[in-house]
Amino acid sequence: MTQMRGVSDFNKLWERRTTFGDDAGAEYHLLSVPDLVLAKKTQRSKDWPVIELLVAIHHRENIANANAEWIKFWLLEGRTPELLNDLCRRFPDEAAALQIQRPLLLIAQGSEQEALRAALDAEVRAVQAIDRAYWLPLRQELEQFRREERSDESDGSL
Image 1 (tube, rainbow, N blue to C red):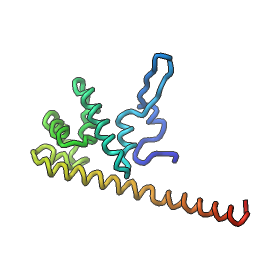
Image 2 (image 1 turned 30 degrees about the vertical axis):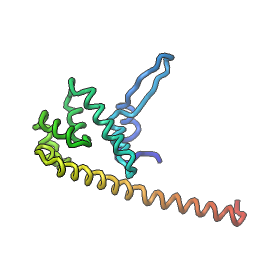
Image 3 (image 1 turned 120 degrees about the vertical axis):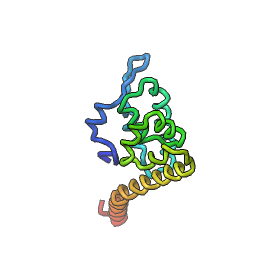
Image 4 (image 1 turned 45 degrees about the vertical axis):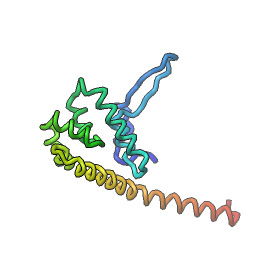
């Protein structure tokens, strides 16, 4: 795997990385939260609660000093009706501008919680389907490679 589906190339990821150090002087380089959220958008159900937490924590820690980039990130990646409703109330112009990119923001501006939950669930299922379709030919190629390798081993070719 030379590139993760849906994220920028390594150089862009490196530019946006989060860096911190420990008391011993070791330095750690991690994906930025927005890049990590994109990387976690997979077919695996266990990744989606992580995305929800990452966005919620980022929002909670940065709302006091919100900038345009973060507001856009929260509106595009928020995973709970409560967060999206709050963001649409606080930042109506930004939410309206992003409705084309994320149509469920129109629902988030109203009070239909169940409709918003259903739209969020549908969004997850759509992304999971995209991820499955992306990986299917690669998995098939790997399986074919493994079958050929086992066949070569069993007939003494290696």
